[in-house]
Length: 271
Image 1 (cartoon, one colour):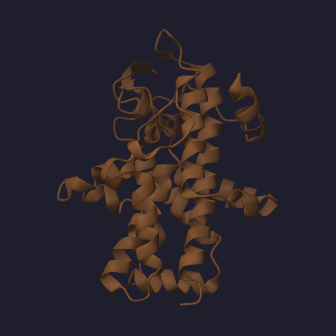
Image 2 (cartoon, one colour):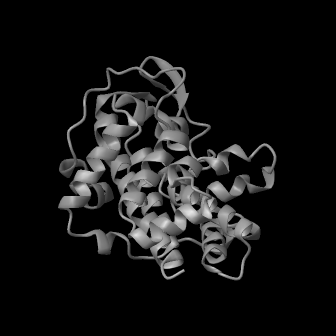
Image 3 (cartoon, rainbow, N blue to C red):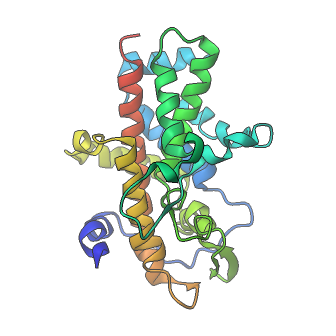
């Protein structure tokens, strides 16, 4: 199975997590759409040089990366045309990204590349670069959520109804929020844990390499091999599925933070 070679080291290598007895809260404290984005932003900020950190503060008028990390979700009601920027539907049975997956250049891959270019352009206005920075922070996070990339004709798992912790949800929501909730860990725990991992790992340069498309295809593989690949036919998700999925999600969050820091260094250093 592809999973064994691609993801088993991740599952075995990360910290053991508590059992799935932690139930979903009706108002989740930890979501990829909010808490997950804050975690990525905060851990990325830890990796920035002083020069780049100051430039981030200047562009954001004193705000932090974490404070603006969910901005792109908050504008969807007023700017619905940006909705496709948050994902790209690459069928899990296809092995490569194609232009047809990003109609009219409206997908997370094209949007991230375009906003990074705006952010790096010193001739742009302060307002344009501020918005571009907010987009970059958010889209790097979205790109690393497996079901924002991999799709099985079900809107990235939104149409896959399942049972988790005694409640009905869907596969997309499970990966967006349910699995983080089930860890029983808060934002501070994740930031501290990732900070410790960053100090010990020697592969950060390798981790930050590659293109936006390369990073997206990692998420695609996780969607194919794990999110869909290990989904029980009963659609009742239990400990076995959670034990495999959680460390993969942790790995995606960590990689997103490392890559966000790398993007910001190459676009903002030397201002």
